[in-house]
Image: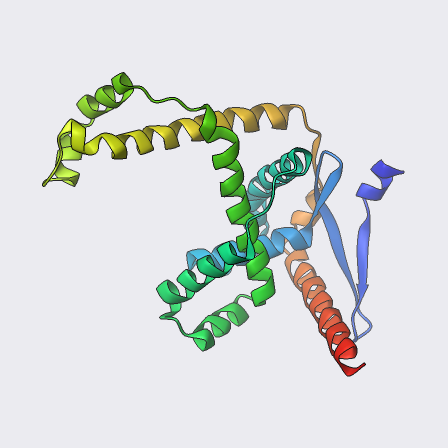
Amino acid sequence: MLRRSLFFVTCVQLLTGAIILDRVAIVVGRRAVKSSDLDRDLRCSQFMNGEPLNLTADAKRKVADRLITQELIRQEIMNGGRSEASEQDVNAFLQQTKTDRFKGSDSQFRSALARYGLTEEQLRHYLRWQLTVLRFIDQRFRPGVLVTEEDVRAYYEEHRAELQKAYPQSNNLEALDPKIREILVGERVNQIFEEWLEQTRRRTRIEYHEAAFHDGDSSAAAAVERATAVKRAAAVKGAAAK
């Protein structure tokens, strides 16, 4: 029954009477990633990167690998009892985005969201998860990293010319030691994470459902999101009226 349930097709009845299909796009272990998940992640990532909206099949295939990685991390977080990023973290990141991209203007920010077919709630959910992934990688893999004095010296000697160009005022080994250590720690954390990810993917069942990557599914997935938003708004309005 579990395997059969993963290959569902969710049907949402809109007010117009049309039936919209939200297909399973990828199965990762015992969990499903739907076409609406691909659509929402694309919209959010392109919004954050300031890229033109692109919901083609090729774009969805490129984002699929990231969502597989995120699902593997999600399962690890659930198994390990780790917490998600806090609302305060999300608020700070969102406010910084508004300042950097929209000069702090809420109206410009909301207009841009509308152009990408997003709600603020959807973007906040996306940002919370991105911050959670970064926290997971840092907490899970950084404690096992060791950088020695020899490592720092070797890096300094190898990159001396570019370091002196980047830091013309203070570029001796002692002054640059903290920066070099942080660079080396970051590189090794990434390496350990990639090794963990490769091993985890090898032992996890991952299946692609090609039908969900057709270009036409983007509008269907968007319609599912809009229908869900309408239903949620109606529920909130109904609760407020009581």
